[in-house]
Image (cartoon, rainbow, N blue to C red; front, side):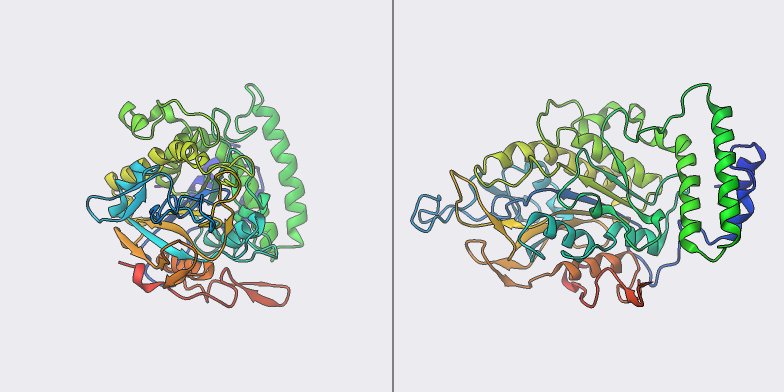
Length: 445
């Protein structure tokens, strides 16, 4: 594989790169070049799947049976899992019947049933899960990973977010905040035009070269007096990455290159409707981006409305689950078949759980005290359940896990010490886990 230096010189010699910027870029510290980890890493990358709105743990990965009249009609309004549940045949982990495909790969999945949310409102809890802070603007986990480890592919961003709509918290869920701007997530839209203005209009190459030349001249003049400004160097690098994406990104998003059996595996031939109807596309593109060296990929299934926030009717969970269940299981299966699962952390999460009591006609309210997430690959124990909740799913009774603990453990599997991954800002050293975080040793293989 050609080195970045060789590629830059090649682009320069063929007038494809802004003339004159070459010396600055080669001299500057490349913010996206792969970096050495603190310790030996078990995983190289992360694919984070985020279910917006608060998935009911009781009706998904911590199913509680409807027993002793717990159907929501009693005076206590207690309501168990309304969908039914079965165990995985290999590891015995019980999963709701609305996730039959994911249940079939639970031997590769580590479930945490004792997660505690950082807040009880959507936006705050979403930001808390993504950034570690529910109240202050902070860099997202993807930005921290990109900052700490760089990227394997200089022609694509190190952090990509595939989202049909913005979730609660808006763009802050993938923002870099005080980290260099190059580490901010690049948003991709499912479908035929994933990144706006990615393809240059035909017959405009000469005009584009003139425009790039002008930008380069201004950048060079500005950079001469600020050569120690790493943020500026990162911004210049972002222009370079954007230009190179015109060649690399269309190929990465072209699913016609995939064989028919892979497209069927992800359910691209199924009829789906409503929120998350294009989730098969998102999952298959995630695998292709992972193959091409993108360090952190986040898939967001729906936006702030409609989503999993089932206050009035829990049966809404069924359609949402149908749209994402097969593609998620396919992603795990596909990564495993290609030998990539061991070095890829697949994280499925939501912002909080839902109450064990009925709300409205047949819904549930927000519940921050406990909820379920899961991880696959990346050195996490497959077929393992960590933590437990009481018999109605209201409180954790074993091994509670805070968001900072999860962040510290994911960084650890990537070879980063969460206490050493810091950035100096406003007179202090910031980190993803702030002053918190403990490794969850029992979920590591």
